[in-house]
Length: 424
Image 1 (cartoon, rainbow, N blue to C red):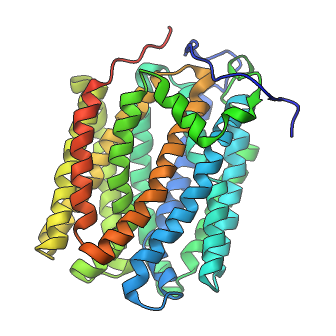
Image 2 (cartoon, rainbow, N blue to C red; image 1 turned 45 degrees about the vertical axis):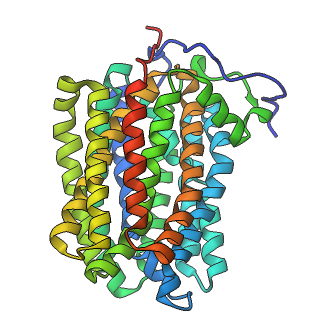
């Protein structure tokens, strides 16, 4: 262990100044590189979404157990991510965002190669563990944006990155669907190559964003237990309602991302190519809503207004999916519901990330992102298993009826969030 590991200390309780240090990465130089990295990152992730259930199907005994095994593999990934997220967040606050990002994307590349090689469910599970232990790329990007962006502009930039992700979602699934026709493992190997490319760009070109003056002096092992980090995050009055609301809307979104391809197969008879087209359309709408509409909404409604509008959209879409799965297995209901749900989530997430980032200082961005990542990972452990069980044993619409209830609870909790205070 490095000698920077200490035995006692607590995360700073007073936010530091958000002003960028003169020693930080120049925003005009770092931002375009970060946009490229985000595009490649999201393209790689979405490229494999249409094929993951079908790769898993090769190793299960029947289609009836597919939803369950997809859920198990997602839960394995989430458990590994849950355990390591606080450490990666703390290391990014201590040593910078760049080394954590490099480690994460190269680790993800190894995981995707293992999944593509396959051979058994045990190998698929090992691949997901490797990917989970390397799941620090998104928190590192989150911290990087906060390092180079004033608090008042963060929601807009998170939204722009969401729009970039939308472009990637338009390209990735389409490429994945084409590659899947050649071989189901081809999209996985392509994603591994993209992850390795991100690692090379980050290693060679990307500057470090976290100035030495804004780094934490040491990493405290005993405070990196995920349950301890979650407790500390919820102890902050400015973060508590935001984290609670985020957890409530994250679980239904996990239901959707984990189960939507299976739901599409069972409800409207779609395969990976048709589902890839749907993901492409979602990406196109992300470009419009987060790239063009979000800045307008932020000016007129503020961060909190955008969060609530997005939550309402999620609720409407989730109800539509529940009805489609339970009563009407028709394209005219399934497709609009999926689009509304996904776009509502995109709006609420970008604005909520801006609020969370503004609630802590520059030396706590990684700590907060690690705590939120642990909460998300905990939801990802519970979500796929709960979704797979409810879908297979209760009804195809059961996860989405439950999701609608959780989103309604979030709509009650989130308006209680006070305005974060960050020293100027």
